[in-house]
Image 1 (cartoon, rainbow, N blue to C red):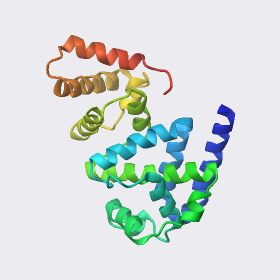
Image 2: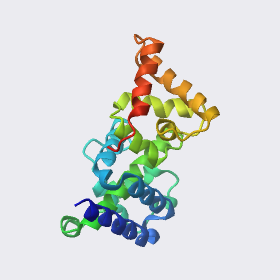
Image 3: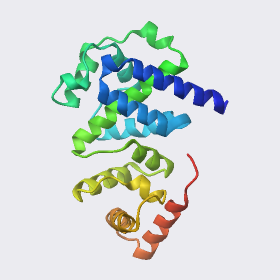
Image 4: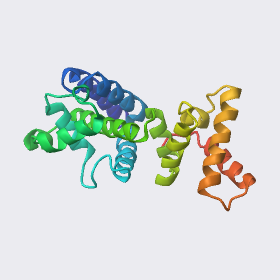
Length: 218
């Protein structure tokens, strides 16, 4: 079963690459990275991205990322044809009629591809809304950690405010050098000081240590 999923993800990456002339280089790059990072957990991670997109009004509460992805593949326009990703999203929602026959009868590879593209569109919409870059590894890590919407939102904001590259995932996985580890560690402490004002520093540090120890997959 696991081998079949990995094979489907690999095939989905090929599908994404094949529609570069339709959806554009930026979406292909993002969706490919998401598929590589997420693997068999694409659904779970995409759900987190979709939820944050709805909370931040990047998409409406009844929007679905797999439908956005399918419409992106159908459209003759790509994000590069618009000034803002929000305008591209409105174009997909209001000007592209979903081919329901093709949508309902898609194979597994096409389903994964359109979900990855849709999730990438919403992720880029969140980046635009927050005016900061959010790596796909970040979405996997916050999903793995089971972080709340408030925690995710605050983490994105603090990296933006500090003008630091978002290295949350690298920190949690012990991949930073000493200087960056200290810097990012202080930022994460600050996140929980603001979110949990009744927690002591010792309690916050203990919480973060438990997060760091969570090295297993989703």
